[in-house]
Image (cartoon, rainbow, N blue to C red):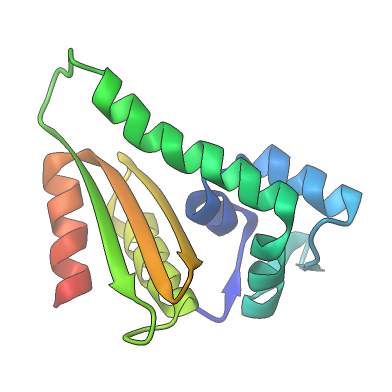
Length: 142
């Protein structure tokens, strides 16, 4: 994935598309419009994720995925929450996010996804339908 859309950023960060648009309006992040749609380079995404406001918002959303999963004891179907800690030297964070985003966009509609890179490691959080999470995990490790 060479460029990211607002929907991709929303999936990666856990932030709403409205929040991302607000960050664009405030100058917190940069991107460019191509054919009327916002588009972001890997450098744009990396720079955005270094911003303190964005980091705090992402942390809140990231924690909410796990908390919401743990708090819901009345699930109607089998659900799974997976936290992967990956050594960043194995694959770069943009490559990892691209792999997950592409697969989720093409194959899944019931997945919450978040990832961040810090201290030489990548943390990926997936939550959703058990079969869909397993399918994504198989895809990543194949």
